[in-house]
Length: 282
Image (tube, rainbow, N blue to C red):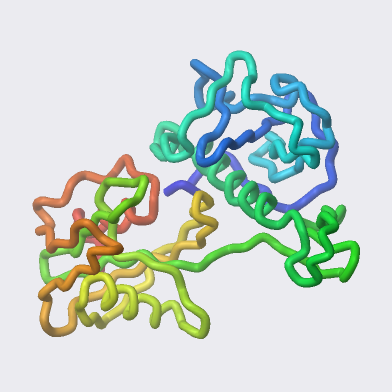
């Protein structure tokens, strides 16, 4: 899965470290990320030396083994990196393959923090209009007026493989960037347990009851600020699907023998589908 980057090691502890010329820099434009043209996995993203911007515009993110990673996050909006020689913006989701596992994990985690910083420039409690300040000890933003502390947002969500004998309930999203096969999924609501979310999402999207929930694995998915939790469960009673057409464009039972090979997919969804395809869902 995307977080399986061994032998590399992910270190997310915050440090107030000045950027160095060889450090990696993530630059985002919408849901695209700046990459070097013709580069391989080891040097896919530009360095501090490549971008030539003020050090004040670079925010420390994390370290992967000995590679220190920064985010282009200028305090002044007139500083731009839309054109960097030898680099071009590519869709963030184009990196989601085993060929770019480390790069995909790094880029999506950087994007997770990018969206958090972008959405938290000013205090939402006192509304003073004064910019939040970056803490020097931990990854946190603080309001200099009322002292409000803002931490990165992580949204818990579920991915569920619903089974009916030798069949798996497979879906496709409606109106989403990703058009491949998916499973029932959704965010946890206030006051719910994760198990409550599993039951509710399956009923809302497919109209079936389930039992025998089995937790399988979890995965950070930074492109949507998620922490995903994966389950298998069995249909309880009538297997007839009543699809929510606003959420899904397709929902159907697919026989194990007809499930496509998802071994190149680094998502938790792909992992669950592969487990079922190989008969390892129990």
